[in-house]
Length: 435
Image 1: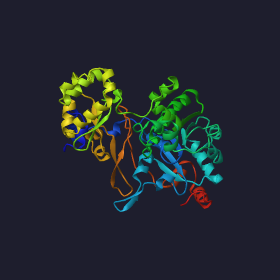
Image 2: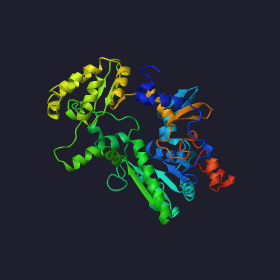
Image 3: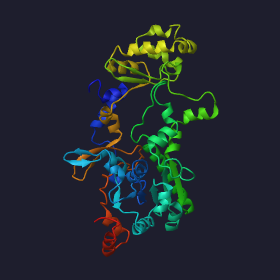
Image 4: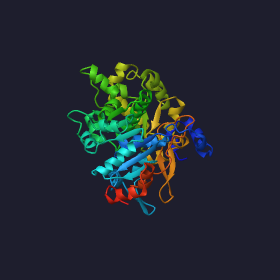
């Protein structure tokens, strides 16, 4: 494995184990003998983009039957990030949040289509949506209506800002509600630097996990009470939760509100990133400076620093912060990543190399954990996909099959819902879906 390859991202004592596990053909248990935690659970989803669909996808990973209701031209996100690969157009990003689902394409502007969705919800356990409150009312998919359709339905509602009140109808994406409005954006980057943009979906997937947690808790309440339950999650509150460590100070310590990082701050001297000779970056995270400073000095072969009066107390470190950061950076730029990986491991420092996405895609540790799986597209070609972000002992929790085509399961879903062939033909003739 080359020095800048994925094995260098692991502390040395774990690399050999991870590589051996990667080579094993028997890692894991036969999925046919494993439990499906959400088997026999039926989910109806009327949602688009990433956050809400991701929660439903994770339920599919755990064995739930998930029916995705989308417009005749499909979820809006189907048209984003589409690439031509192996002679066909495919949206690999869409696959992440829609794997394992069935699709029925309906024009919800038509009352007959709304009737069909009500018929599906009548046999479902969970309804998932990210429609704003005015649109759920427009399509007769609001909580009060669906409680009448299915008195024990669990209603999972993902919103940008709020499900009620003056901002209930305010549209929001993760970049606006999660990233900017919540305060996350104000803390990113270094002090004095420009505003930092979020990565696509960076707030969507944490919000989807929160929605999943809310739905599972609501299911338990439903099972205990026999009554409908509603779980509401917002991008805004998820953003707030991700910076709870900082926000808790802002709430209670006026005048001590956290700001962007300053590398010259004493607290960050060995909790910061440094560039190596070969252009790689090493992230150090050692919160206990008095304990770890001697170890870092040893790794850098600078034992003289351990007794240097500039560095021998918290007060002097703070006083000489910019100078220390500069000297640390000079030392790290003197050797390649491979050298520092071995030196930092040897002295017990806590560190990680900043990995590129190409390296992460080949990381043997992630593969050994089942974090990346392989599915087949509509032509039978293999493609890789990020797996469920958790495991349950003895259970088959992973993506099972590709995302559906638009309306791929129209007839199958309608037949299962009790519609006859004649009724299905009449529905098609009414224009609520396209044959």
